[in-house]
Image (tube, rainbow, N blue to C red; front, side):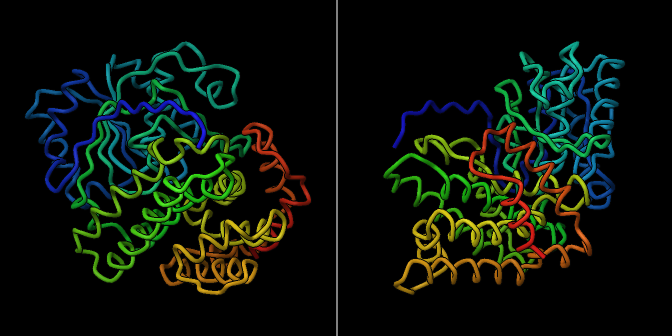
Length: 388
Protein backbone atom coordinates (compact mmCIF):
# COMPACT_ATOMS: atom_id res chain seq x y z
CA UNK A 1 0.00 0.00 0.00
CA UNK A 2 1.28 3.48 -0.91
CA UNK A 3 1.07 6.67 1.22
CA UNK A 4 -1.97 8.87 0.64
CA UNK A 5 -3.90 11.87 1.91
CA UNK A 6 -7.67 11.59 2.00
CA UNK A 7 -10.04 14.52 2.38
CA UNK A 8 -13.60 14.76 1.13
CA UNK A 9 -15.55 17.89 2.13
CA UNK A 10 -18.93 16.94 0.63
CA UNK A 11 -21.82 16.56 3.05
CA UNK A 12 -24.14 13.69 2.11
CA UNK A 13 -27.84 13.68 2.97
CA UNK A 14 -29.09 10.17 2.17
CA UNK A 15 -32.47 8.47 2.28
CA UNK A 16 -36.04 8.41 1.05
CA UNK A 17 -37.69 11.81 1.27
CA UNK A 18 -34.46 13.77 1.71
CA UNK A 19 -35.02 15.63 -1.56
CA UNK A 20 -37.43 17.87 0.33
CA UNK A 21 -34.48 19.24 2.32
CA UNK A 22 -32.97 20.83 -0.79
CA UNK A 23 -34.23 24.31 0.07
CA UNK A 24 -32.66 24.35 3.51
CA UNK A 25 -29.42 22.82 2.28
CA UNK A 26 -29.14 25.33 -0.58
CA UNK A 27 -29.90 28.23 1.74
CA UNK A 28 -26.92 27.17 3.85
CA UNK A 29 -24.55 27.93 0.94
CA UNK A 30 -26.18 30.93 -0.77
CA UNK A 31 -29.17 33.16 -1.29
CA UNK A 32 -29.62 33.03 -5.08
CA UNK A 33 -28.93 29.87 -7.02
CA UNK A 34 -28.43 29.00 -10.65
CA UNK A 35 -30.71 25.95 -10.94
CA UNK A 36 -29.11 23.62 -13.50
CA UNK A 37 -30.92 20.57 -14.84
CA UNK A 38 -31.30 18.49 -17.98
CA UNK A 39 -34.25 17.80 -20.19
CA UNK A 40 -37.93 17.30 -19.32
CA UNK A 41 -37.62 14.23 -17.09
CA UNK A 42 -37.59 16.07 -13.75
CA UNK A 43 -40.81 17.84 -14.75
CA UNK A 44 -42.53 14.62 -15.85
CA UNK A 45 -41.59 12.85 -12.64
CA UNK A 46 -42.81 15.65 -10.39
CA UNK A 47 -39.33 16.23 -8.96
CA UNK A 48 -39.17 19.75 -10.38
CA UNK A 49 -42.27 20.79 -8.43
CA UNK A 50 -40.84 19.39 -5.20
CA UNK A 51 -37.55 21.23 -5.74
CA UNK A 52 -39.29 24.52 -6.43
CA UNK A 53 -41.59 24.15 -3.41
CA UNK A 54 -38.61 23.46 -1.16
CA UNK A 55 -36.64 26.44 -2.51
CA UNK A 56 -39.64 28.72 -2.03
CA UNK A 57 -40.20 27.44 1.46
CA UNK A 58 -36.61 28.18 2.41
CA UNK A 59 -36.67 31.65 0.83
CA UNK A 60 -34.04 30.83 -1.81
CA UNK A 61 -34.20 32.75 -5.09
CA UNK A 62 -33.13 31.02 -8.28
CA UNK A 63 -32.53 31.40 -11.99
CA UNK A 64 -33.04 28.34 -14.20
CA UNK A 65 -30.57 26.95 -16.71
CA UNK A 66 -32.07 23.76 -18.19
CA UNK A 67 -30.98 21.79 -21.22
CA UNK A 68 -27.86 19.91 -20.12
CA UNK A 69 -27.27 17.08 -22.58
CA UNK A 70 -26.22 13.53 -21.61
CA UNK A 71 -22.77 14.58 -22.85
CA UNK A 72 -22.57 18.19 -21.60
CA UNK A 73 -21.14 20.64 -24.11
CA UNK A 74 -18.99 23.72 -23.83
CA UNK A 75 -21.44 26.10 -25.49
CA UNK A 76 -24.15 25.31 -22.90
CA UNK A 77 -21.65 25.79 -20.07
CA UNK A 78 -20.61 29.17 -21.44
CA UNK A 79 -24.25 30.26 -21.60
CA UNK A 80 -24.66 29.20 -17.99
CA UNK A 81 -21.64 31.24 -16.94
CA UNK A 82 -23.06 34.32 -18.67
CA UNK A 83 -26.43 33.75 -17.00
CA UNK A 84 -24.85 33.37 -13.57
CA UNK A 85 -22.96 36.62 -13.98
CA UNK A 86 -25.95 38.49 -15.40
CA UNK A 87 -28.17 37.58 -12.45
CA UNK A 88 -25.56 37.77 -9.73
CA UNK A 89 -26.08 34.27 -8.36
CA UNK A 90 -23.93 33.24 -5.41
CA UNK A 91 -24.35 29.45 -5.60
CA UNK A 92 -25.49 26.64 -7.88
CA UNK A 93 -28.02 23.85 -7.54
CA UNK A 94 -27.62 20.87 -9.89
CA UNK A 95 -30.48 18.39 -10.14
CA UNK A 96 -29.63 15.40 -12.30
CA UNK A 97 -26.96 12.81 -12.95
CA UNK A 98 -23.26 13.20 -13.56
CA UNK A 99 -23.69 15.21 -16.75
CA UNK A 100 -25.76 17.88 -15.01
CA UNK A 101 -23.43 17.99 -12.01
CA UNK A 102 -20.34 18.17 -14.23
CA UNK A 103 -21.84 21.06 -16.20
CA UNK A 104 -22.73 22.85 -12.97
CA UNK A 105 -19.16 22.46 -11.71
CA UNK A 106 -17.86 23.99 -14.92
CA UNK A 107 -20.26 26.91 -14.57
CA UNK A 108 -19.30 27.33 -10.91
CA UNK A 109 -15.63 27.57 -11.86
CA UNK A 110 -16.17 29.80 -14.87
CA UNK A 111 -18.49 32.23 -13.09
CA UNK A 112 -15.90 32.75 -10.35
CA UNK A 113 -13.06 33.50 -12.78
CA UNK A 114 -12.17 35.82 -15.64
CA UNK A 115 -10.50 32.90 -17.44
CA UNK A 116 -12.34 31.14 -20.26
CA UNK A 117 -13.67 27.90 -18.81
CA UNK A 118 -12.15 25.65 -21.50
CA UNK A 119 -8.68 26.65 -20.27
CA UNK A 120 -9.36 24.60 -17.15
CA UNK A 121 -10.04 21.56 -19.31
CA UNK A 122 -7.12 21.89 -21.71
CA UNK A 123 -4.73 22.42 -18.81
CA UNK A 124 -3.68 25.99 -19.59
CA UNK A 125 -5.25 27.34 -16.37
CA UNK A 126 -6.13 26.04 -12.91
CA UNK A 127 -9.23 26.59 -10.80
CA UNK A 128 -8.52 28.71 -7.75
CA UNK A 129 -12.11 29.14 -6.60
CA UNK A 130 -15.67 28.29 -7.59
CA UNK A 131 -19.18 29.21 -6.55
CA UNK A 132 -20.55 26.76 -3.96
CA UNK A 133 -22.60 23.88 -5.34
CA UNK A 134 -25.45 21.77 -3.99
CA UNK A 135 -26.66 18.70 -5.87
CA UNK A 136 -29.66 16.39 -5.99
CA UNK A 137 -28.62 13.13 -7.60
CA UNK A 138 -31.12 11.48 -9.95
CA UNK A 139 -28.88 8.95 -11.76
CA UNK A 140 -26.30 6.90 -9.84
CA UNK A 141 -23.25 6.48 -12.06
CA UNK A 142 -20.34 8.89 -12.07
CA UNK A 143 -19.78 9.78 -8.40
CA UNK A 144 -19.65 13.45 -9.40
CA UNK A 145 -21.94 14.21 -6.46
CA UNK A 146 -19.01 13.48 -4.10
CA UNK A 147 -15.86 14.30 -6.04
CA UNK A 148 -14.11 17.29 -7.57
CA UNK A 149 -14.07 16.06 -11.17
CA UNK A 150 -15.89 17.35 -14.23
CA UNK A 151 -16.02 16.32 -17.90
CA UNK A 152 -17.42 18.27 -20.85
CA UNK A 153 -17.19 18.10 -24.63
CA UNK A 154 -15.92 20.88 -26.86
CA UNK A 155 -18.28 20.31 -29.77
CA UNK A 156 -16.11 22.38 -32.12
CA UNK A 157 -13.09 20.09 -31.74
CA UNK A 158 -14.79 16.87 -30.56
CA UNK A 159 -12.45 16.85 -27.58
CA UNK A 160 -14.02 15.40 -24.44
CA UNK A 161 -11.75 16.49 -21.59
CA UNK A 162 -11.99 16.31 -17.84
CA UNK A 163 -10.13 17.67 -14.85
CA UNK A 164 -10.47 17.84 -11.11
CA UNK A 165 -9.89 20.52 -8.50
CA UNK A 166 -10.68 20.83 -4.77
CA UNK A 167 -13.00 23.86 -5.19
CA UNK A 168 -15.30 21.73 -7.36
CA UNK A 169 -16.37 19.31 -4.64
CA UNK A 170 -20.07 19.92 -3.96
CA UNK A 171 -20.75 21.43 -0.56
CA UNK A 172 -23.72 19.12 -0.11
CA UNK A 173 -25.35 16.34 -2.11
CA UNK A 174 -28.79 14.90 -1.53
CA UNK A 175 -29.12 11.21 -2.40
CA UNK A 176 -32.77 10.17 -2.31
CA UNK A 177 -33.13 6.66 -3.79
CA UNK A 178 -36.87 7.16 -4.32
CA UNK A 179 -36.30 9.71 -7.08
CA UNK A 180 -34.60 7.03 -9.21
CA UNK A 181 -37.70 4.83 -9.42
CA UNK A 182 -38.67 6.43 -12.73
CA UNK A 183 -35.29 5.87 -14.38
CA UNK A 184 -35.45 4.01 -17.71
CA UNK A 185 -33.99 0.51 -17.67
CA UNK A 186 -31.19 1.60 -19.98
CA UNK A 187 -30.04 4.37 -17.64
CA UNK A 188 -29.78 1.93 -14.74
CA UNK A 189 -27.63 -0.37 -16.87
CA UNK A 190 -25.42 2.46 -18.16
CA UNK A 191 -24.93 3.86 -14.68
CA UNK A 192 -23.91 0.48 -13.30
CA UNK A 193 -21.34 -0.02 -16.07
CA UNK A 194 -19.94 3.44 -15.35
CA UNK A 195 -19.57 2.85 -11.61
CA UNK A 196 -18.03 -0.59 -12.12
CA UNK A 197 -15.45 0.81 -14.51
CA UNK A 198 -14.41 3.49 -12.03
CA UNK A 199 -13.44 0.77 -9.57
CA UNK A 200 -11.93 -1.61 -12.11
CA UNK A 201 -9.47 0.84 -13.61
CA UNK A 202 -7.65 1.31 -10.32
CA UNK A 203 -8.05 -2.41 -9.54
CA UNK A 204 -6.37 -3.45 -12.78
CA UNK A 205 -3.70 -0.77 -13.28
CA UNK A 206 -2.38 0.36 -9.88
CA UNK A 207 1.20 0.02 -8.68
CA UNK A 208 0.40 -0.13 -4.97
CA UNK A 209 1.74 -3.63 -4.37
CA UNK A 210 -0.18 -5.77 -1.87
CA UNK A 211 -3.60 -4.11 -1.51
CA UNK A 212 -6.05 -6.70 -0.12
CA UNK A 213 -8.19 -4.04 1.55
CA UNK A 214 -8.60 -1.99 -1.63
CA UNK A 215 -9.09 -5.11 -3.76
CA UNK A 216 -11.89 -6.40 -1.55
CA UNK A 217 -13.47 -2.96 -1.32
CA UNK A 218 -13.64 -2.83 -5.12
CA UNK A 219 -14.81 -6.41 -5.47
CA UNK A 220 -17.49 -5.99 -2.80
CA UNK A 221 -18.89 -2.77 -4.23
CA UNK A 222 -18.93 -4.21 -7.76
CA UNK A 223 -20.73 -7.35 -6.63
CA UNK A 224 -23.25 -5.19 -4.76
CA UNK A 225 -23.78 -2.98 -7.80
CA UNK A 226 -24.39 -5.98 -10.04
CA UNK A 227 -26.73 -7.66 -7.56
CA UNK A 228 -28.74 -4.50 -6.93
CA UNK A 229 -28.90 -3.78 -10.67
CA UNK A 230 -30.36 -7.26 -11.25
CA UNK A 231 -33.00 -6.55 -8.62
CA UNK A 232 -33.82 -3.08 -9.98
CA UNK A 233 -34.08 -4.35 -13.54
CA UNK A 234 -36.48 -7.06 -12.34
CA UNK A 235 -38.48 -4.66 -10.16
CA UNK A 236 -37.97 -0.91 -10.74
CA UNK A 237 -39.85 -0.14 -7.51
CA UNK A 238 -37.38 -2.05 -5.32
CA UNK A 239 -36.28 0.82 -3.07
CA UNK A 240 -33.73 -1.24 -1.12
CA UNK A 241 -31.94 -2.12 -4.33
CA UNK A 242 -32.21 1.48 -5.55
CA UNK A 243 -30.51 2.60 -2.33
CA UNK A 244 -27.62 0.17 -2.83
CA UNK A 245 -27.23 1.36 -6.42
CA UNK A 246 -27.13 4.98 -5.36
CA UNK A 247 -24.64 4.67 -2.51
CA UNK A 248 -22.55 2.06 -4.35
CA UNK A 249 -22.04 4.34 -7.36
CA UNK A 250 -21.03 7.17 -5.04
CA UNK A 251 -18.54 4.94 -3.19
CA UNK A 252 -17.06 3.86 -6.51
CA UNK A 253 -15.65 7.30 -7.32
CA UNK A 254 -15.70 9.55 -4.25
CA UNK A 255 -11.86 9.52 -3.92
CA UNK A 256 -11.86 6.81 -1.21
CA UNK A 257 -11.43 3.68 -3.36
CA UNK A 258 -8.02 4.67 -4.81
CA UNK A 259 -6.46 5.50 -1.42
CA UNK A 260 -3.25 3.50 -1.07
CA UNK A 261 -3.23 2.25 -4.65
CA UNK A 262 -0.42 4.59 -5.71
CA UNK A 263 -0.30 5.44 -9.38
CA UNK A 264 -3.06 4.11 -11.62
CA UNK A 265 -4.49 5.03 -14.99
CA UNK A 266 -7.95 5.25 -16.56
CA UNK A 267 -7.49 3.67 -20.01
CA UNK A 268 -11.15 2.77 -20.47
CA UNK A 269 -12.17 6.40 -20.03
CA UNK A 270 -9.41 7.31 -22.50
CA UNK A 271 -10.97 4.88 -24.98
CA UNK A 272 -14.57 5.83 -24.27
CA UNK A 273 -14.46 9.62 -24.31
CA UNK A 274 -13.82 9.80 -28.07
CA UNK A 275 -16.78 7.48 -28.71
CA UNK A 276 -19.32 9.58 -26.83
CA UNK A 277 -17.77 12.82 -28.13
CA UNK A 278 -18.05 11.76 -31.78
CA UNK A 279 -21.19 9.59 -31.70
CA UNK A 280 -23.03 11.16 -28.73
CA UNK A 281 -23.91 7.93 -26.95
CA UNK A 282 -24.26 7.63 -23.18
CA UNK A 283 -20.94 7.47 -21.35
CA UNK A 284 -21.85 4.25 -19.54
CA UNK A 285 -22.88 2.65 -22.83
CA UNK A 286 -19.48 3.50 -24.28
CA UNK A 287 -17.73 2.02 -21.26
CA UNK A 288 -19.60 -1.28 -21.54
CA UNK A 289 -18.39 -1.44 -25.15
CA UNK A 290 -14.70 -0.83 -24.44
CA UNK A 291 -14.21 -2.53 -21.05
CA UNK A 292 -14.46 -6.19 -22.16
CA UNK A 293 -12.37 -5.44 -25.25
CA UNK A 294 -9.68 -3.70 -23.18
CA UNK A 295 -9.64 -6.54 -20.63
CA UNK A 296 -9.12 -9.15 -23.34
CA UNK A 297 -6.37 -7.06 -24.97
CA UNK A 298 -4.52 -6.42 -21.72
CA UNK A 299 -4.83 -9.96 -20.36
CA UNK A 300 -2.82 -11.05 -23.36
CA UNK A 301 -0.33 -8.19 -23.13
CA UNK A 302 0.35 -7.60 -19.43
CA UNK A 303 -0.62 -11.02 -18.15
CA UNK A 304 -3.87 -12.60 -16.96
CA UNK A 305 -3.33 -12.72 -13.18
CA UNK A 306 -5.34 -9.65 -12.10
CA UNK A 307 -8.08 -10.40 -14.59
CA UNK A 308 -8.26 -13.96 -13.31
CA UNK A 309 -8.61 -12.71 -9.73
CA UNK A 310 -11.52 -10.49 -10.76
CA UNK A 311 -13.14 -13.38 -12.62
CA UNK A 312 -12.95 -15.64 -9.58
CA UNK A 313 -13.75 -13.10 -6.85
CA UNK A 314 -16.61 -11.27 -8.58
CA UNK A 315 -17.96 -13.47 -11.36
CA UNK A 316 -17.69 -16.92 -9.78
CA UNK A 317 -15.22 -18.41 -12.25
CA UNK A 318 -13.60 -21.60 -10.90
CA UNK A 319 -11.11 -22.40 -13.68
CA UNK A 320 -7.62 -23.01 -12.27
CA UNK A 321 -5.58 -21.71 -15.20
CA UNK A 322 -5.21 -17.93 -15.03
CA UNK A 323 -5.41 -17.29 -18.77
CA UNK A 324 -8.53 -19.40 -19.11
CA UNK A 325 -10.09 -17.82 -16.01
CA UNK A 326 -9.41 -14.32 -17.31
CA UNK A 327 -11.00 -15.16 -20.66
CA UNK A 328 -14.04 -16.72 -18.99
CA UNK A 329 -14.41 -13.69 -16.70
CA UNK A 330 -14.37 -11.28 -19.63
CA UNK A 331 -16.97 -13.41 -21.39
CA UNK A 332 -19.21 -13.47 -18.30
CA UNK A 333 -18.90 -9.71 -17.80
CA UNK A 334 -19.85 -9.11 -21.42
CA UNK A 335 -22.81 -11.47 -21.07
CA UNK A 336 -23.96 -9.62 -17.95
CA UNK A 337 -23.81 -6.28 -19.77
CA UNK A 338 -25.84 -7.81 -22.61
CA UNK A 339 -28.50 -9.10 -20.20
CA UNK A 340 -28.66 -5.75 -18.42
CA UNK A 341 -29.26 -3.99 -21.72
CA UNK A 342 -26.09 -1.95 -22.13
CA UNK A 343 -24.20 -2.41 -25.44
CA UNK A 344 -21.00 -4.41 -25.82
CA UNK A 345 -20.27 -3.53 -29.45
CA UNK A 346 -20.40 -0.53 -31.72
CA UNK A 347 -23.22 -2.12 -33.68
CA UNK A 348 -25.32 -2.68 -30.57
CA UNK A 349 -24.98 1.04 -29.83
CA UNK A 350 -26.18 1.96 -33.33
CA UNK A 351 -22.72 2.87 -34.63
CA UNK A 352 -22.65 1.02 -37.93
CA UNK A 353 -19.31 2.16 -39.32
CA UNK A 354 -17.08 3.68 -36.63
CA UNK A 355 -14.08 5.72 -37.72
CA UNK A 356 -11.47 3.80 -35.74
CA UNK A 357 -8.62 5.98 -36.95
CA UNK A 358 -10.33 9.16 -35.73
CA UNK A 359 -11.23 7.56 -32.40
CA UNK A 360 -7.63 6.44 -31.91
CA UNK A 361 -6.32 9.93 -32.69
CA UNK A 362 -8.61 11.48 -30.08
CA UNK A 363 -7.70 8.79 -27.56
CA UNK A 364 -3.99 9.47 -28.12
CA UNK A 365 -4.55 13.09 -27.12
CA UNK A 366 -6.01 11.85 -23.85
CA UNK A 367 -3.07 9.44 -23.44
CA UNK A 368 -0.74 12.41 -23.49
CA UNK A 369 -2.92 14.63 -21.34
CA UNK A 370 -3.55 11.98 -18.67
CA UNK A 371 -0.03 10.51 -18.90
CA UNK A 372 -1.21 6.99 -19.68
CA UNK A 373 1.85 5.06 -20.86
CA UNK A 374 2.17 2.09 -23.16
CA UNK A 375 -0.30 2.82 -25.95
CA UNK A 376 0.60 3.49 -29.56
CA UNK A 377 -2.05 4.35 -32.10
CA UNK A 378 -1.98 0.79 -33.40
CA UNK A 379 -2.78 -0.55 -29.93
CA UNK A 380 -5.80 1.71 -29.67
CA UNK A 381 -7.07 0.73 -33.11
CA UNK A 382 -6.64 -2.93 -32.16
CA UNK A 383 -8.77 -2.48 -29.04
CA UNK A 384 -11.44 -0.60 -30.97
CA UNK A 385 -11.48 -3.41 -33.53
CA UNK A 386 -12.40 -5.81 -30.74
CA UNK A 387 -15.45 -3.59 -30.12
CA UNK A 388 -17.01 -4.25 -33.50
